Image 1 (tube, helix red, strand yellow):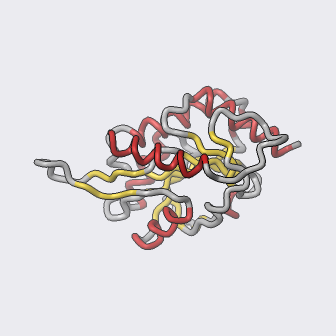
Image 2: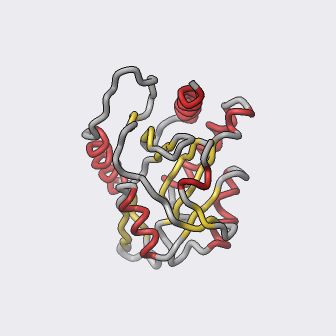
Length: 200
């Protein structure tokens, strides 16, 4: 658990250094990263076999999270919190949000496993996968770090990974970073605030 906390704090420090003009911006509970010069592309495949890029969801907010299905705590908690947040939003608003779960464990997370795991939390959620090279590129593009490790005496392996989520607006631009532990109410409020700002 300490590993993902260190990764999250390190990423938070990087994001705090993103040079953004904070004037005339909506107030978010997460980190406003409007103007960030990373997270400009995505080239993976969803669990239904469809190619996915940032242009695939134009007009919707995209919540992007990197994790893996064997994750013991962070990933199921994050997906559960995202699902709870959507339930707190008005129906018309929640329909304008797409949650994407990018697997950083391409060896084990097959499309079939992602299709069984990700929509379990919410039917609209999509699991994304790719070759090890494609996943590594996506992680670099979004400044996400991950590393496989084996606990002493364990049979399998775990993957340490960044624990926060990114939110992109309806034009595919990075706008928010939501740290792990952001409550469903805070997530819902931030998404509603961003939807309102997008429509202004």
